[in-house]
Every structure is written in C-alpha cells, then in structure tokens.
Length: 127
Image 1 (cartoon, one colour):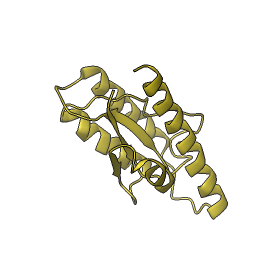
Image 2: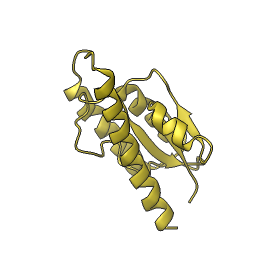
Image 3: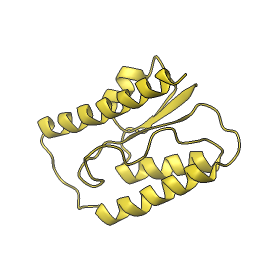
C-alpha cells in the first residue's frame, strides 16, 4: 500500500522524505498536525496510523507524525471519527508553551520517529 506521512518532526522528514511523500509542516503544533490531517480526511484520504499513538500524551510532546493513504478516494467516516476524537482529546491536554531543552526536544523527535517507523514497518509487512 502506498502512503504519505504528515509530520512536524524534522527527524522524520529527514529520514523519510526521499522514500515517501511527506507533508512536513515545520512550525506546526501537535494540534495543527491533527487539523491538517482532518483536512486531508475531508478530501478523501484515509488514516493508516492512529493519531494518538505512543505513551506520550498530547500536550506533553511538540512532535506528531501520522500516516495516511497516498491518494484520496472518498470520505472515510472511520478516519473522520478517529481524527475528530483525537482533536477533542488533544484540546483537553493542551498546555501552555513549554521551553524544553534541546536534549528533551531531541528525545521527543526520536520517540515520534520510532513510533512512525514502527507504523511504516507494519504497513509494509501487511502488503
């Protein structure tokens, strides 16, 4: 299955930009990544990885990557419900802007990259 990645994580972009289509939204917040994904779902893309994967709660990390289908078809109501629920949940956890150290930011980038790598491996194994 062909897919594309939506991310605000520069590490994910660097690792995968030459392998898969990547929508890299460099300065987007976690919530903005979800909202961008919702706009893609409205256009007919399907979500392939859960928007709230991982053990880090929304609001506790600035980085988010989501895999969607590469091409749009028709509105997928399961994907729409999934992204709407993720947005509602994320809004409950939004914290004030935190000034994380570079080391902590690096850790968050690595965690997000590991999670999306697992998603990619799972998708590729199922094809």
